[in-house]
Length: 330
Ligand code: PBG
Image (cartoon, rainbow, N blue to C red):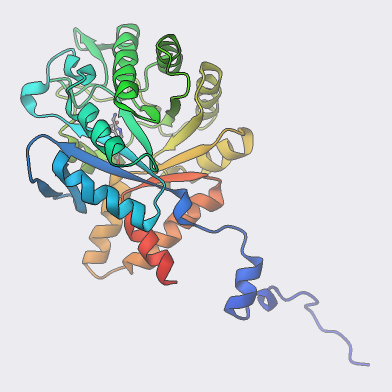
């Protein structure tokens, strides 16, 4: 008898070819994991590429139809709407944010008029509507939490009236989910859900988005209301609070530098978990691949699959359409 030399177990046996790798695979990215962000602007016939986000566009309302057709054809289940108003619609209190004829509300109505198949999320915040660029009402350079809650509730209601399936508060005001939930309930929108940007960090990865939305704050920064990047236990507290306040889906944002937080939240919470693969993460892959330093498709799929492995149920990503195209070629 031959004596068995080490090792008894060879991990590579289950890696020998595609079919066995497919059988033992633990996590798989599918199109059903993806939410596609759209930036909608005033005007007509506008499809303008955002310089720091190649292949992401500012679209006017008339261009939403082909966007919706693309998503339906590819089978991307959801999209998140970011209205980018002209500067004349911005003021210190951001009151245009809850105008029923505002760009976000018209965009939601337009999309819902085209189809009810997609799940429409709408970003609820003030930073694109305030002249100073902060996510709330400001007094003497301070962002006033409780005054802002009323504004956020009104914005969320106006999005629900326009037809949003889920409103997505991203302002990081304490109590925003409760304020929105109660406004929706008292106006008979009990079936409109809340995807809360619960653990949203004060991150440098939002730079390209702020170019796209022209939403950088005029003074100071967002460190007094968004989470401090070194913290992770605090993320669990934020998530727990939002669930108590009525969130249906919770979120960790950004995603790439916060994989540990995604993992921890997914292990400690049984609500659906969204992660936001933000603009800076997208721009880094785009830039490196333009230089020929990385293979864009492979590195994008590896990144998105990493979010699944960490525990994400859904991913907001500017790569949603390209990812589905790549997946269908595999
Ligand atoms: C609005 C909002 C931001 C993002 C989503 N919603 C910007 C911010 O907080 O400054 C960032 C998304 C991205 O970077 O892709 N508050």
